Image (tube, rainbow, N blue to C red; front, side):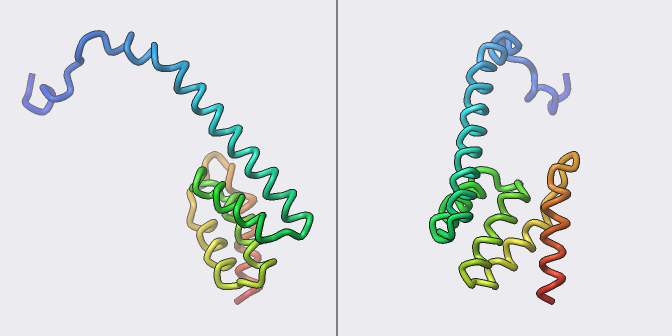
Amino acid sequence: MTHANARFRPIGNSRKRFSSRRPAFEENAATLLEMAQALFERGLSQFSAGRHRRARVYFEQLVKLLPESAQAHYLLGLTYKAMGNDELARASWLEVTQLPDFDGANTEAKQMAQRLLDRQA
């Protein structure tokens, strides 16, 4: 065993140890997704009702929870724009265009953000 490999040798029965933690991980992941869905729905509800400051709070929390979600950044940008803060809106939309595209999940939000940025130019 080389020196580099010695640092990464299995300790005990790692397969059993990790498999016993899987249900907790899945439960935590489900909880995070539920939180994200609730923030998304509340933000949209507040935005639709014209309560942009409240919507901003939900979308900012959503961005913190899912920082690589183009949709979350896009909606936050729309909210900033509705509040009259073009600078923050532009920053949010620029962030959208820089995010990776996970199997097409961010494609639509990236395209919409780019169109809005092009209009502002």
